[in-house]
Length: 247
Image (cartoon, rainbow, N blue to C red; front, top):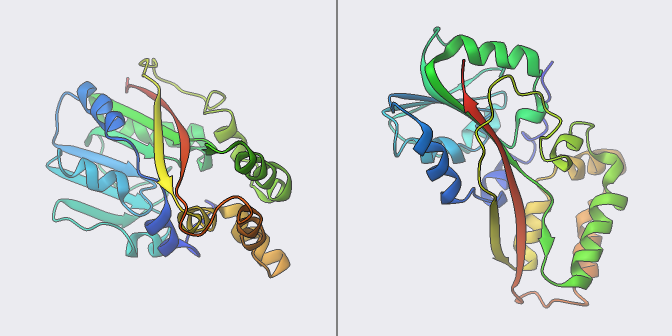
């Protein structure tokens, strides 16, 4: 049974999740040969689907969470539906590009890649990417954050989180990997943006269900000895990717 760790905080997810850099899309799209149809798997709030819709004639975006799709970006050429990654109703040889943003670590890899092979057109491109744990440009604040991530909230992550920490290196990949450049997401945030982002974490929601209190509240309070509510600080997310031609 697929895990749905994000329906509860779907509205926060749509508002506070970081946006993938334009350079990443440019790199992926350079490798695509045709721009008829794309599938964005585990689309969440439709962030990737909305960008692909600017280039592709038709974009099909699936997720297991209706609440996520209810908060997704809408466009005439984006078709949203509920579906598991490993089993869809799409016909064989349908897609020129298949993407997965920050989600493949939740999948049954063998079954998913069987589905990818089935519904991909010849010479289609498959790209899966994710982003790691953020760093804060203030050393004291970053130390507090890393302690929150690793110690305070660490045990509440699902086991699949290790694939993120390993930057997808241990995820099997049945296609020849296309080497990609290094990407990053950089933002200037206040404590409000940081708090909103942390509340999208599945580990935080799990902690709340168990303890009936939000650990983010105390963590944000600890940062107030460093930052005022209006102070702006820089955060950086490393982005990693596995991409190849489906054969």
